[in-house]
Length: 153
Image 1 (cartoon, helix red, strand yellow):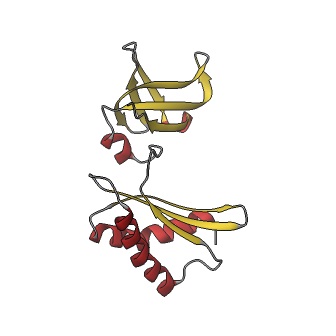
Image 2 (cartoon, one colour; image 1 turned 180 degrees about the horizontal axis):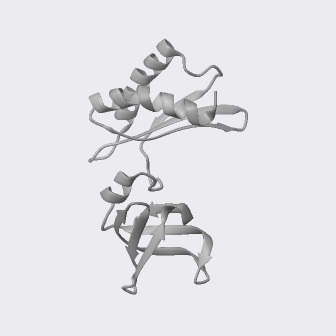
């Protein structure tokens, strides 16, 4: 079974569990690291996610995975908060509008591959930031290697 397919199947299984517990399903990853396969489920909620939240989702999802057995090889299940995760989905760009972000490009633009600024919004696949110099810049998501929030202390 292809990695993408596993993530899709597990997402469909996890979504009702996460919804019932009033969390957001942020992402599902199925990947090999070294000799082990990892199934990672990222959840979030408005006030943040604690260890008890992760354990509860892990237990309920583990039972569902055991019942349906969509993954034939052995794997390690991890449920965690997203931390400083990349912005991937439309709702991520909407949720973090007005916050500082870092944008890393695949190819340089004006001699630079990394930009920072306030996330102004997303229209289709184009998002805008306002730099500290007050310049508004537009980026196409297909040209970005990474977009993530910047946490300043």
